[in-house]
Amino acid sequence: MERKFVCIICPNSCQIKVEYENKTIKKIIGAQCPKGEAFVKNEIANPLRVFVGSVKVTNGNFKLVSVKTPIPIPKKYLKHIGKLTHSLEVEAPVAIGQTIALNLLNEKIDLVATRKVNKIIN
Amino acid sequence: MLKEKEVIIIGGGAAGLAAAVACQEKGIEDILIIERNAYLGGILNQCIHDGFGLEKFNSSLSGPEYAQKYIDQVKEKKIPFLLDSMVIDLSTQKEVTVINRQGLQHYRAKVIILAMGCRERTRGAISIPGTRPAGIYTAGVAQELINLKNYMVGQKIVILGSGDIGMIMARRLTLEGAEVVLVAEKLPYSSGLPRNINQCLYDFDIPLLLNHTVIDIKGNGRLSEVTLAEVGKRGGIIPKSKRKVACDTLLLSVGLIPENELSRQAGIVLSLITAGPEVDERGQTNVPGIFACGNVLQVHDIVDNVSLEAEYITEGILDYLQGRISESQEIKMTLGAGLRYVVPQKIFTIKDTIFSFRVNQPGKKKTLVFEEDQKLIKKKYFPRVNPAEMLRVKLSSSELKDINKLKVKLV
Image (cartoon, rainbow over all chains, first blue to last red; front, side, top):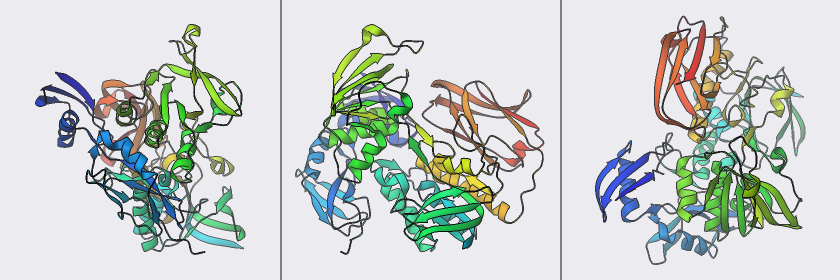
């Protein structure tokens, strides 16, 4: 089998062609760096993506804190994690890198904050 | 009372912050950043997706994380900034009028850095006919509402234009539980980055219809349907391709316009193609001491390049402040086949210079050629070119030496 991919790791957007049988890769053409090769290997075995979303904040100078998974997660969980973020809430202040949720879906999926939110003193 | 400053930076987004930090690192002490929002960081605050900073920080950051790296430096270096403060007037004499809660304030600076960014083209700008219901947003406004203000914009969404923000919003809305019906693009190719087509549309089975546009909008109170049509080879609508698509929300991602009202007031000459100021090799406009960087100069696709451009122009700013700019004869620049524009538009002095380009259309195996008459100055090969991706090439002072004119083309 042969499949073409556009690498999403960096703005180079390498167009990579992969020849494979079942899940065994035979040839990778077009990747400008090793990250591209690793990307297509994952795409064939188990596609991974970083989830980004937002979570409600109380008493903050922003209403929401943006969050991401610290590592890419299986693509199939993205929508489910999106739904789960609706029921999360966190109290200001929030620091970048602060853990917002742990082990979601029992799949070791964590969320960390990517925005600094200051506490508003009323 | 007129307050004097060495450098005033208009805009505290990606360009303004990087320029401020770089000025300070070059020993310029008396800097002021003026930001109209309640926080620094500009548009990066609402760009919560990752992929920023791959070049500058060698890691994939979200927009707020990228901004915070610079905000932290501004605060560490104690660079002064005004928030909730809007510049309402800029003069050729580099006088700046600011309005904020303290009232009107007047400044004068030796150097002004224009870093006001850009804004989105709207429904009015592309003249879509139809009724005027609620539910029509530009992609960036929808992004602000969802990511900063916690308002959901709709449930059944059509996106017109395949710019990066439009595609990123397609993914964001899907993950927030909305249905994105389709993305329509008038051109035969996407105006966004290929990786975004992949990870924002194809990952979620959202169709991208090339050569398609919205020709009518219907809705009483709220948007209820749009009419979609195919665009023919000569740009006209193919009548039998018309079809109605039910939706409650239309997002427009149809281009960005550098925000240059202040530049015009100051008598700055703007390029008809980039809609940003025409600048020389130092990023200086036709008004001595007024420099420009970031999206107000030319719309960028990658924020790392905005930061690099802002840092780059501070070399020229230091030269200007220290009286080291001696204008020699202008090198005439001309644009050959295949290119939409080049920045800078003029060259006065020979120094290492970074040129930015956009191509006219997608292509493979192209070479960018710099020449004087028929003499080759430099060439650079690109396996792939795309109008969505800005090209940047550096020419050294030795390559530019003894040149009277410079022609650039893509072959």
